Image (tube, rainbow, N blue to C red; front, side, top):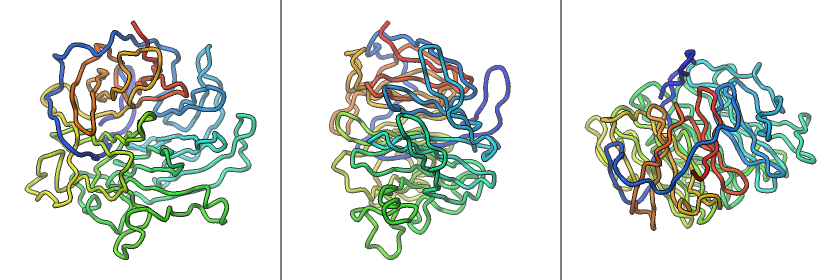
Length: 382
C-alpha cells in the first residue's frame, strides 16, 4: 500500500495487515452484489492525513494524524491537538503515529508509533475527567524494526481487557528473514499483553498466563498468533468478541481472517509460506495453517485491504452484523456477511472515500471512514 494523496505526495509505501481465519471465500474485487443497505458518507471533518481513531470518554471520537497529532471530533470538526508527538516520530516510509486505543474503563490512552529511529513504540497516558495527564506518560512496549515498511502498528483492547498489538513481518519484500513463521521474534505477529499488570508490578507490562506459548521455551510469551505479513487493521466484533484481521498481501492476494471469541490463540496464518490460500513462491502450506475467511486478487483496482469493523450500530439496521472493509487503492466500502466463520454473502455499498486508510468505531457502534487525503466521514443511512 502506498501512502499518497490526490493533491500532494505523501511519502511512503504501506503494505500491511494480517491473516486469521477458518474457512475461505474468494472473489475478484466483488462489484455485482446488491448493496447490503442504502448508505451515504457524510464528511464530518478534515484532517491532516488521518490514520487511526478510537472511541473516547463522554461519547467522543479521537482521531490520530500520521505526523503525530491527536484531535477530538466535535460538532464543529476536529479540536486543536490534545496530544502532539510530531517531534518524536517521522513519516519516512510507512512510519508515524499508526494506532490509538483506550482501555475498557477509558482511564488510559495508548498511542502506537515509530520513534525517530524507527522503533515501534507504545506509550500509555492516564486520563482524568476525560483529559490526558501528560506527566503520567510511560512507555509500555518497544520493538526494533529492520526496515521502514510493514510496521503494523494497530492496537486494540480485546473483550478480555488485554492489549493486542499488530506487528508486520519487519519489511522489505517477501519476508527475507522468515519472521512470519519464526516464534523467536515478535515480528509478523499479533501480540497480547497486560499493561495494567505492568503498572501494578512496576514493569512495562506483564504477560497473561494463558497466552498460547507461555510454556514453550522456543517461543516468545507475548505471541498470540503468527504467520502475518502486515496486519495493518484488525478489530473485535463488539457483539460476539470474534477477531477479524485484514492482511495486506505481497503482490497477488488480499485477505481477511477470522478467529472466534473462544480462540485460545496460537493460530498460524501462513505467511510467508502462504499468501492467502496460495503457496507463496513455491512455499509449502504449514500443517497448522489457518486459512483466510475471505480473499480477493488484484485483477481489479484493489492493492491493499483496509480492515474495518462488524457493524453494531443502530442507525443502519440492515447493516447489523456485517463486516465492513475497503481497499486503499479502490476506496469502495464493502461488506461481508459472516456466520460461524464462513462468508455467507458479500456486497458493495456503492460509496467511495478516496484512499481509505482506516475505519473508526464510536461508542455507539457507528462507523467512520478515514481517507489519507484528509476526509473523516461517517457512514449514515441514505
